Length: 186
Ligand SMILES: CC(C)(COP(=O)(O)OP(=O)(O)OC[C@H]1O[C@@H](n2cnc3c(N)ncnc32)[C@H](O)[C@@H]1OP(=O)(O)O)[C@@H](O)C(=O)NCCC(=O)NCCS
Image (cartoon, rainbow, N blue to C red):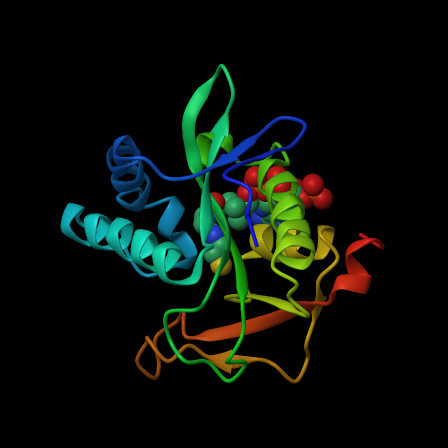
């Protein structure tokens, strides 16, 4: 099966990673605002490790998050797309969708636009039968993206993230799911 190298949406280019993406990725992962609902901010060494991990997973599985580019405006505004969760979760085995944008680009519908294209890629090119997403309950922006792209909360799916110790405020997570038939209804 040949997979597309990139995806164009109305306003975005979802593309493969380049070495030049290391620096803007590190800047994003060092931003406390970006980390409001995730553990961090991360030092440069952790950002470099994350860059390597993403490349390795794409090499192994043939897919992973895309870099989000705004053509003629910004070569890196974040990354989003599909992946296999790093940790074993109650929903595992599963494919997740996630989104991570530079704060100055929030609130313009970019995550939703890129996420819709990623879902389509997952269902039409990868033939997936379900995609999940999860976040902390307070991350309303992320939950709103999930809802706007047609995902439904699995009320029985709440879980404690295994990477965080008991009592950590970011440990409880909510789980959303979507199957191919629901994509058209979004
Ligand atoms: C989550 C994230 C990707 C959203 O990106 P975005 O481009 O701003 O998303 P969109 O503009 O497509 O949609 C955001 C929606 O949330 C809404 N929203 C954002 N903050 C909100 C808040 N505090 N309360 C209520 N709604 C809120 C927006 O109004 C919008 O909904 P609308 O279109 O109905 O008005 C971005 O906030 C981000 O990168 N956050 C840091 C990383 C992160 O937390 N990722 C998720 C990890 S699970």
